[in-house]
Image (cartoon, rainbow, N blue to C red):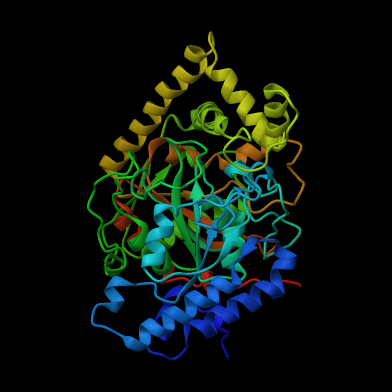
Length: 491
């Protein structure tokens, strides 16, 4: 008999609608699963069990009273979800994985949280992450180490590693992450789930604790493309509280999954299949591309000539924006304050609560923005960013979707890259260009390596063409079995 926690979000929702299960039953099953496995995995920073059960009971009561518009107005009614701890949740501790925000309880909800609540979400808790979303492994969390459900000696990816591990291990039906340079797609790939980074401006960033304001985007994570589309239907759309949110029409992403991909043009960028790609990763991704071709897609070789500059450009722009954004954390308005008498010693001691990776990026960012270096570094990086964006624009004149790997390798061992920041940064080499260009990307499972670790296929779409991207991903996923695999977590 299938456990309730083995259901996909869409399967759970169908059973809730048919009254085959109740939201309280489903929520209790997830809370029991969290209690059973999270001591091993460290996916959650906080579990809101009391609130979750209250939300679930309210959802069951709403279904009992019914109403003609219930399914349309509350499309996720009674579905238990988790939120990355970078999203503001009213009255619930929001730490961003940092000691400098320990005890901070926002007085408002992020727009995506507000929309999910209105849609009927049951909130299970807040998930673990790299401090201020700076990292590719979730080893930079100030609170606990997160582990990969497929192999607990390995990382779940980052910075949304807690969300990915929670979904993969059956601790929630879906989750939200944030993606500044790959932080939804990388952990989705490492943990064998589906994760989408929408176009920049598609989902409101209001209430997202900022890392890189021109790069950050909130994205859904779940087991299937259909599940991700259901969440995106709820969180996408213009928000006047976010000046970067675009007033672009939002299609019904679930309805758009039904079409085939006959004649769809899929671009294969030469630059994404070079040295450094783990052989099993390349084999699995190329097999996935052949599968898409067998489904009727037309494969076209393309070039994204400025790809090699993505990593240095990103690690100038992102730290620069982080330096400015994190200046507000000074012990005066948020979190703990380490009192040392005079202002400067107090300020220095309080900001000393930042972890080493955050300090490193603040220093880099402050340097590149300083007088005498701004034009040489930040100004040039922005100019090259424009070239990277133009590469994608030209590519999408030839193709509908681009296919590549998500990461050069599968999940690495915990501690393997901790003392080698450059090697850690290379984990994002295939994902960061999308954030620089503002285009959407999705990771879907496409195989396993010789150690039984998941491999992700990355599909990339033109700006605000998530519907096309999701249709291609759905065509692949519904004709393969990789997403049905489940890790056996050793407790």
